[in-house]
Length: 336
Image 1 (cartoon, one colour):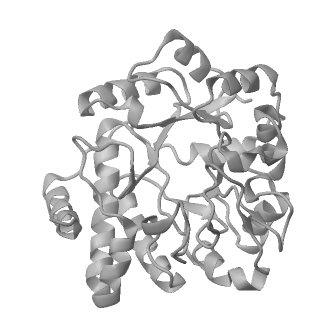
Image 2 (cartoon, helix red, strand yellow):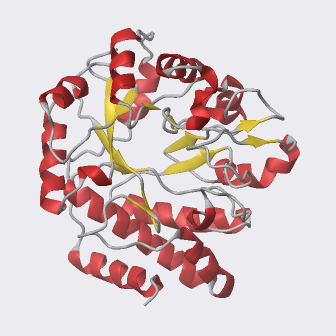
């Protein structure tokens, strides 16, 4: 891979400080990013020091990311604002659309501003899956069942993220809300015809996103592979939906990714399908296998897409007055 562009792998670490093995792996040319989890967080000072050390390891800097959506998917809690689940914004939209849009912008700003102040570059949000109801993994992470409401609220959240210094990542393409199984532990299969997925695809068609995360779901109408491993879905995203941002895989250690074999087969297949950055999480032995055995062809265009997600500065701090106002609007959404 080019020394001047990020590599295609995003990996993780076990603790709150880097080990020598972590540093060695994070400096590998195939690695372009790191995803942090709750186990990597003790307090804001520790997180800031960790991000500073990661950013100083190499040039170009590694992209530091986290799943920090709000509600039950928020990796850092103590010392951070407890953000509401996105369904609460959808419920507010049912009664007061203007207030919901304002609250979504505020939530996006607070989310981004607090992470960026500690050196975290990016959060995998917003969730664009529709709230069909029975999903075991999406649930209140979704804004609403109505795609027009999802587009409006996700767009407002994205405006807040941008104001706070962070890009957007719509997930889980092309839609994880309809199927019931949780792709962390099962392989979901969506048996609807493509025409029936028009609502699910609408947010990806209408929103200006910096990145999307593909789903570990098989959509029988389109391909026998999951979206992560489907060159047909990635081509649809690029050609039909005119998307030119980063395509992330969901975590390749999830059960839904096991359809193609071991981790080396998974990264090879996802890369061949057209994904730009491949997440390998909670599987240190598999990371070793991939770093030792994978030799992808250099693709500068993919590296350039990922590089666009890197903020100009390693940290940025919000205007205190703007932050306080946004924080008050966020806290008003939370239950007493």
